[in-house]
Image (cartoon, rainbow, N blue to C red; front, side, top):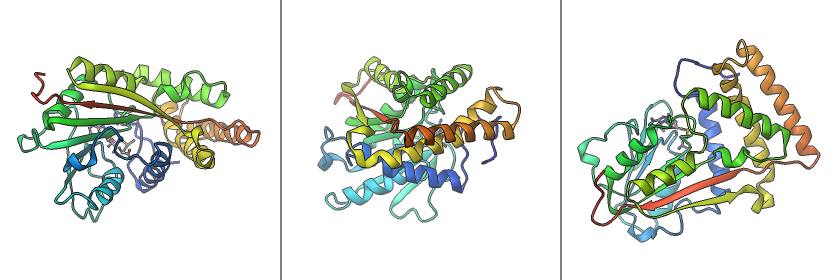
Length: 285
Ligand SMILES: C[S@@+](CC[C@H](N)C(=O)[O-])C[C@H]1O[C@@H](n2cnc3c(N)ncnc32)[C@H](O)[C@@H]1O
């Protein structure tokens, strides 16, 4: 099992195995969201500068740059993350910087971006961080620019009849609550965008079940989440005594998951997406 640093605020590792997991997960998320890396409500011809915060390996930004570069000239791309550990070795035309979403961005980024993308910070942010994060996103968006924030949050787990999903929900809820985090991340993002005066805010759901072709990959990604995040949360929240016990519990749950899948009980994943627009006359945050 990947070594777990229980003193780190961040529950995932940042090694090669985790980078591979993120890239594989990105492929599945793209399929679940009907290959709309940029939401259809955002006119692509107006997107000439894009920021991706919590970028990880930069996989979303890399794919977006390949799409936009076909039609838009001189696009500017910038990936931000609290750690540089997973930044690509050959970043091409994408800039990468170390930046915490909960801290003010350097002045050179203010009012710079037509679109800011954020994905999968649910296990990283504390509940009180969301308001600051939205304020910081607003500061780097141009007036009229869009935020697109995507999460796999409690909506995937909350009322599932599947006992494996119920166990993940129990474990994540207990652990995230103990760490002051918010499992209802997409609802929180939507609420903070509204409170901050963003316009046209919507929260949409994409379900992996809407395309049967996603099933096998969804099952594999869920097993990877149990191996990494479930094991990490068990240990961090003191539900097991050591890494070996966490690994054993995660292994048992993965076996149970595969048995249910073989029995036709393959659980869906929901990707929650919030899109909102900074007013043309700016925001007073
Ligand atoms: C689960 S990964 C998702 C990576 C990427 N967004 C994706 O969808 O493939 C979360 C990323 O957020 C970064 N992160 C955690 N806390 C952060 C913070 N406060 N500000 C910026 N990035 C953060 C982590 O280092 C990690 O790279």
